[in-house]
Amino acid sequence: MLQSIDAPIVIIGSGFAAYQLIRAIRRTDASTPIQVFTADEGHDYNKPDLSHVFSKRQLASDLVRSQGSEIANELNFELYANTYVEAIIPQRHSLIAAGREFPYAKLVLATGARAFVPPMLGNAVDKVVTLNSLQEYQAAESDLALAKRVLVIGGGLIGTELSMDLASAGKKVITVDPCMQLMASLLPEYIATQLGKQMQRQGVYLALNNSVNSLNTAADQATIVATLASAEQLEVDMVISAAGLLPNIQLAQQAGISVGRGVLVNDYMETSAKDIFALGDCAEINGKVLAYLQPALLSANALAKTLLGQPTKLSMPAMLVKVKTPHYPIQLAGQAVDGVYRWQMDIDAQGSSVKAFAHNGDLQGFVVAEQHMNNAFSLLKALPRT
Picture: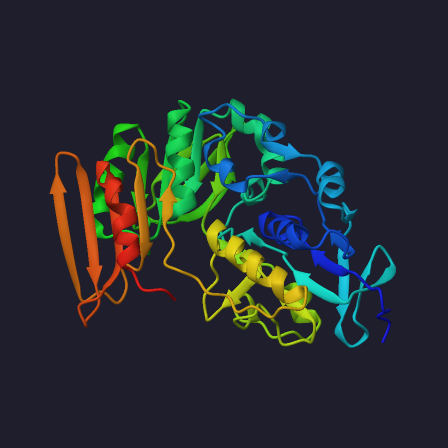
């Protein structure tokens, strides 16, 4: 075993979950050595801000709260920026990066997730843009600023937020999704319909119950022709895929660590390998990948205690999700679509509320829109803790 007695806590990844973990550790321990390996520059930024960069006319540089070197100095850790981790060797408590072997006392996988691009035909498939990171937006920001017609693949949470923001910035937007409604896994039909109507009022063309078959360069070589499953053809300047996220599990898988959709962890965020943990968008907890900020924050706070010798089980309350669609604001929590025995709807001139009840009569989820969002916190308290 390579591990030395003073080997550091090593974190792979520099996103929200990684930096919240370090902050939580540093609140009680200022000196334990920490190393961060990241494939990017390690800048600290708020990833959800990427959903409204267009209406705010922000550049990627505007989103950076701290440069990588600045946050490393602030939180007292060693940053290996632009450094790919090539392999993890659990039996040696080490990893390989930049051709060198580095020991760890504890290893944390915070490798995040990558945007899913559905399979499509055509010679312009390589022009599809994803906006799941600061670097991806930075690479595309100039072209996106000039684009007048944008096709968004995906009508889930992120796709819907992006579509509304692009429309708010004055762009012509086409949103394509295979489901019959927007945000099909999160919103009851009535709320989704009202959201869709608002987006249409903003000029968004909704191609629901549809998909993109092919993307081909137009005759002018400057635009893209999208052919949908319905045979409709649409000419656009840019195509963004916001069709979901795939946890980055490759490193764990190659190291023999158990994976499912994400890296499998228990209630202490432990993987199947000794002294290796996972959190954030790459972790699968009790069969779920929770790609939201609050689960990452709670996981980081619990894991910090565990890493410092105080094993702490992760406990998550019902969590409120704010959908960033300002022209039709929505908040939701729990499960208001699947496994619902009964819905209760309250609709008036101020907005809408939908409560979802389980077979035993317990509230299991809710969605509130517009002025009804004032009821969100009282409803949240009524949901069971998981």
